[in-house]
Image 1: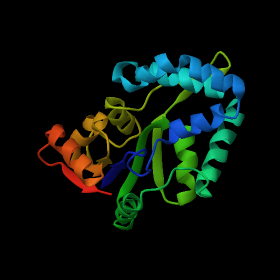
Image 2: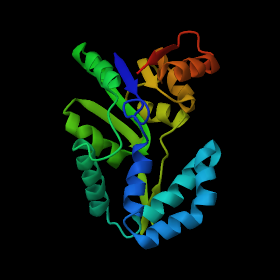
Image 3: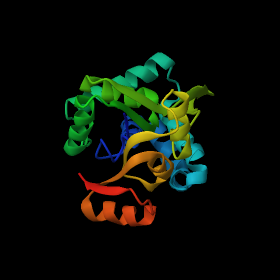
Length: 216
C-alpha cells in the first residue's frame, strides 16, 4: 500500500523553503534590500493560490541569483546539514516520523510530495536513511537565477504521483493543509494533522466522510 505525506507543517514543524530562502537573503545586503523592496507585492502573491507560483518565483530568484546548479545543490545541502545539527528553528515532528516509520515497518511504500523544491526536500530527507520517494517542485534557470518550473501543490501533487507511477489512488494521505484537498480525496484513509483544535477545524471544512484529524 502507498502512504503519502506532505512535508512542511506535516513532517516538519515549519516552512523549510521560506527558512532556506531567508537564510540566504539575510547574509547578503543586496539580496536583503531587493527582498524588502518586492515583499509588499510578492508576499500577498504567495498567499493567494492563483499567484503563489509567481510570487514564490520572485523571492526564489532573488535568493538564488548567480547560483549554478552545483551551487544551488550545495546551498540546499548546507541548509540540510545545519538542520541536522539542530542549528535551525526547524524540527521533525516526532509523531509524524513515527507514523511514517510504522508504514515502512508494515511494508508500505512511502512518498513525500511537497511544494518545496525537490532539491531542498531531498537534502532534508536523505539523512533519515529511509526508503522514501520525494516529489517536489522542479526549478528552472532564468536570467541567472532559479524560479519554480512545475509547482507541486494542490492538484499538481496528484499529477506528480500519477506521473511517477503511483496511480490515481493511494491508501493513506497525511497533510496539515486544505490546499491538499485533492491529495486527501485520492486517499482511502485521508488524515488532517496538526494541533488538535486546528486539525479538527480543517477536518470540518474538508467535508470528507472518511477523513480523520490527528494531533501531532
